[in-house]
Length: 287
Image 1: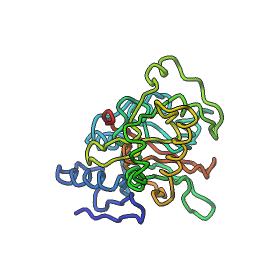
Image 2: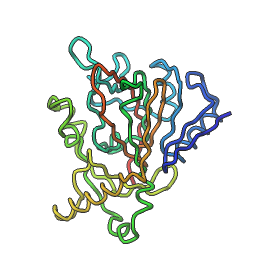
Image 3: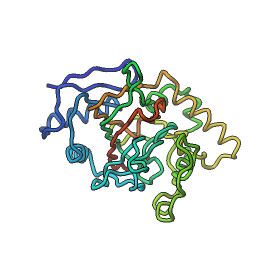
């Protein structure tokens, strides 16, 4: 029997009583999906998963994306994007600086991701043994619901440009990144998405903008559009909309890329090691 422990934030719930390394019956899996839709971020503690088990569970949520940065994926597993500060033979084994800005995974695609499934293999700790490298999640549903009615009317029907190149080239803690290849640029052209999108499963309205990849509001003068975007971004990540996850080794966490955005807390450095692996579930075109 599943049980849950809700956070005090508008999102974020622990699901207990399940071993994800085993084949789940359809009823249990449907219950997990229902909780995921309801709570936007759900997690399971103390899971012991092989890469194959991680991928197999994720595939039950839908088709998996193959990330454009294959140099950051686990060898032999193109579906597993590695987020880590670990170096081997003088080279990083994954993305060292992923998620330093508020963002939604793959929002720069024509069909952004439905959700991400993140597994903690190594978690950094401070000298007292407390975990570091938390992740912040903000509810785009709660943010939209809290907008004044006048602002809702103002942004209804507006679209915004989401740019992978903008997010990729922003200043990073680990220094400059290699230029994108022509193939990577071709796979990730700028796209326009509604500023307010409708969740495809729940029907709830979500603010679909973020500081990492949203570059401008379509159809507005530059100055006016920039001011509106800045106002919406500041509103959407207020502490009242945020759940902060403190990682433990063995955590398997699923977040909704339609109804949330997230940001990493970079408060650690080698020799404090962090090793996470992410699958990303394909989504649908926003409406």
